[in-house]
Image 1 (cartoon, helix red, strand yellow):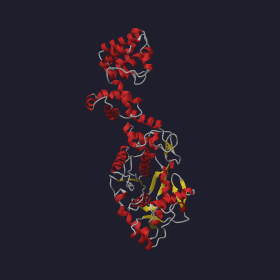
Image 2: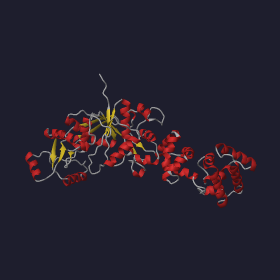
Image 3: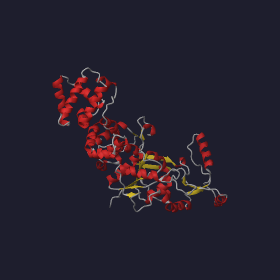
Length: 488
């Protein structure tokens, strides 16, 4: 007997950017498919006609691919179950709509939105769960025809069975039960003929042979409606796994007030895709070991739904920054340089042409900066010290350093050593302080700090040896002269 091949899907609504929570859902589906040797499908749920856009769809696909999440079937890839946009599948839905109407499992409802809202307000006032009470549930064919002749439009509602317990067997949440009497007859087709999400998703998952539905916890409330539709249409019910929400550090639902919420906001700051993936998988899933750094291929081997927690995950930006910093330092210098140059260009520190001409010098800057970077946009503030011939003191601490009596003489000696050196490089930077100490008797912090401040304007930051090598003879002499003439 051959083992059933698992098939999962990610079905975003193209109504905005790819939210960090959506990216995690896509990642969990991808990893589950890879781990089980199954298939991963991506389709677009564009039933929200007012808010859906082609631009949002393109951004979502771009960001998924940036993260390294590839799919076996679906939008932009093709396959045997297309088309892969809901509104291009309307003709496919029609036979299932007709089936429900013929079997009396669905009916036309002519209630206006104003009538429905008034009913919901009344239920809220009584402390009841708002739901449709079935005014049009038993209309005769004559009444239906009369309403149509009057020009009244209708939606199609699903007839929810009464007094039934709807049981969801969830791989993450366990057994969850809903009473059908609390659901109310729900709309499956809008008055303009567009299918409603809950109906379209059931038909699509069935026709696309989806075996496991991994999605956010907020969809759990939709699940009883979908199970009723599966049963009414005679479809096999897939396995469900509802992943907990991602919360901000204050343990409320993650929103803009917690900072960046979309994948492209992180990519534009210079976070690496593999770091985002590593961080996202740890939001709700835990490995069997204490390790925290994983490659995508390692995660494909390790991931399982059994280790997905039902507890909410907290988005810890400090943890993300730490993980991203690990990846920045582990990556090839050439790659980090390539990714850093656009930030330097956008900041006006260097032109694209200069970045090509001075590639070796730029790589030295990136190499010196990356131990201090949590994301690549930080290269701008770190690299500023290497551009220009003047020095801007960072703070009062730096200004105090230059007020010491011995500073003018020390800087003069240092300038002489720079001018006399055959070559200003790492070897020079490593030896010049011993020579100056022997000549002047100045040592320790009194030796290093004034030179650091004179060259960079900072008491802390990039290693002084790196500063000396990267600035080179001309820039160091120009800065020492500036400090001697203006700041000491």
